Length: 349
Image 1 (cartoon, rainbow, N blue to C red):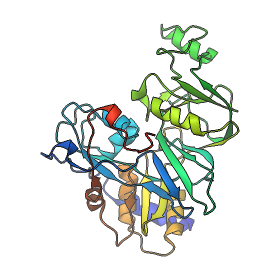
Image 2: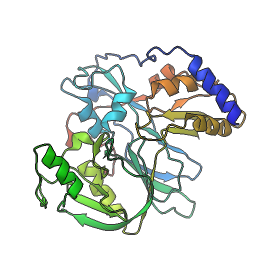
Image 3: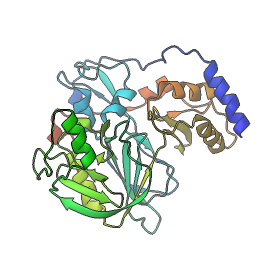
């Protein structure tokens, strides 16, 4: 199988190295509210064990004052994943009438479905409920901010040892030193409140100095911004805090290449590998070939996904829709104007 993957890698490298074909930005002169509400983007109920992807792709029309920061939070997405899915859109001024693809179809990480599984490559966390008698689970998915280069969020298997509401922050010596050298000294303790970077809730792991927590700077969710901790939107950390028990497992993985059979289609989801992370493209090709089970794979589409790094699951079977057509199949949904009106999940997750 390794030799097969090498052939496919040669195929990938043989394609022109110019900029990938970006998605065509469309301007639509229809009120953004004229479409049905979005399908859930954070909470997915009664997911069977044989289902390996949750959610669905959706499209909205931007308002005049929208930025991708606004839209990302409105629909439970991270900033970087929304930018990657819309490479032709100005993230700071999309413009009224611009169509935005919401990458709200997620292939589940290759890990046991229990507790929390965090994929740092996709900057997305999955929280699994206990299965019912039929093995079905509720899965909640949240965008996260992770450690920046030099302060990478570690991978491995951990567990929750403490949960704290309105936590105080005790900056580690290394962080205090960094701030002092930058001319921005920190106190030994930052009390709970609007200036506390931990936000309203903190979940401590059995890994010294690492937390899953909220933030007082939600615009950084979905980016590499922290000193290694994991940040969630304020509304998302409150939901996770309420459902995650002390002792729950937390698996942190680095999987930029994800594949699944979903709705009888072979899907491939490729994220830009972290600078200091997993870049095993050959292993991903091997996995994809095994998953296909002999069905015809369009390796040109696979190669294109490896160049574009959009993070959007796309069909890579020979008989499936083209990536451009696949994007047009995304359901057009409404774009609420205010955050308090913009949580698509009935549960408010």
